[in-house]
Length: 460
Image 1 (cartoon, rainbow, N blue to C red):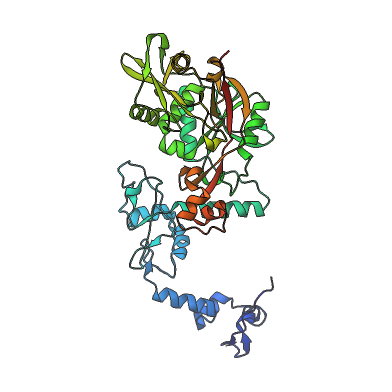
Image 2: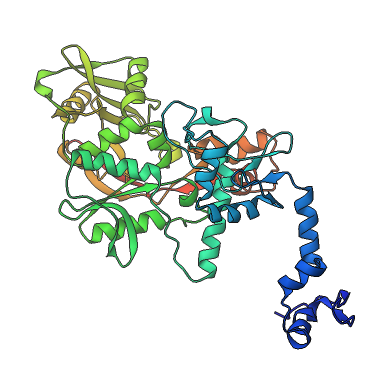
């Protein structure tokens, strides 16, 4: 870059020669070696335009170092200046802005919050030194507390990724707080797990893995696992690579962990075959239950929640509902036509942290005896299931479906059936645009899963 020379005219007050500011320092060295710039300024006054402007700004400023009462032009200058007092910015602001007491989160959790270096502006335009906003603690919001929206945080992170890619570096963010929570939970119920392992997939990272049990667990934040960053088959290809190595891979989605944390914990305990209550189906009564009972039970215990169903069967242990299986007619949305005697098993689950030994078999046997089905199909979500239960009750594997997609906004996923093209047009969308474009314009992201495993049962 070409150096810009300050050509502001100046007269040397020692020899009265006409010069430019840009060459004055050299002039002093050649003609007046007894003078350096500092001595000249102390005797004849400041002459450099930048310094004069800085002096003007300092005189106008109300920023003063509380330690020595020296005025500063900017807060940035103050941050550098306080080093001469052997203090950093956090120590300085705790001493003078917070009365010597480290501020804590206003929600009452007692967590000490980070002091922001530059501060923020309040409603009057005055700069205040902020306490960092703690994610999830919305009661912290007040003047002097910096808050960031989900969108602004994502933009900042995206910019960081682009900078790293531009410099030829691989983006590897620090472990998210949610991923850390999952890891700590798994550590509490099972040994041998490690974080951020890159030994299996040629440098590609697995969030949490146990090589002895051959189980990997991935936490998928919705934004960075949307189609902005991950293509249609990204999650499926990673799962298949793990399967080739003999490992099971379980995906935990952000909205599951945020909204259904206890269900996720129960699922993980089941996958790892640890803890929980064990009940034997032979000690349980089986009978059909109401739609309301099924919906409440599935809402509390199934990761996908309740579904529309025709038949709902429950297992009761000491009159307490401990397991539910539901059935419905074949769904056109999955490419099937409803036929007499053909059914789909929609949902099956037991109470949280409970294993009902033989429960699935007893429920399914009840259904077969009462309804005499010609054929029953069912789908296992590959994100977290390998379909073990189907082998035990006589189903046969038919194959796997292609990855499906959801729409997501913030920290919530929505079934794509809510946003079909005709529904979007009815809501005022331009019919010339595709579903994907309309949803993108409305601020939704597309999330691809790993598809489903399809099973079928037929009488022998």
